[in-house]
Image 1 (cartoon, one colour):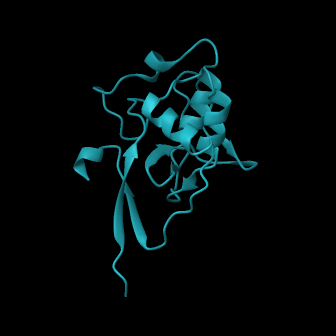
Image 2: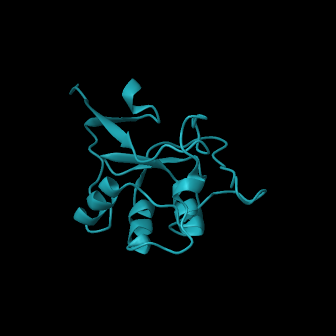
Length: 142
């Protein structure tokens, strides 16, 4: 049996409102914008084209700013649980991030935006079946 390569995915954002967020993480409010930002639609396409990394039970995510709504985005015509981990082989994010970017214009890190642009605004690379992708909100613990 071939040995698997371990690939550690980088968490895109740390928000106290996300699964495993802590009180020392910034609040998403600090990253909200009144208007859409440049290439926001393209970034949303990129996020939606990501790979689902795991299926989680109870993946609903609360919209902390408009309760009792759920932060469960539509991906490929289906509602996806907001706590579902997604990624592109380099970065990982929770599906709910799509909802918050779309509804509240939450800004994302410039390093990720550059990466998405370099990929043509679409996750096209399949995950390598000979690799084990690991992700953690606490990347330094991997």
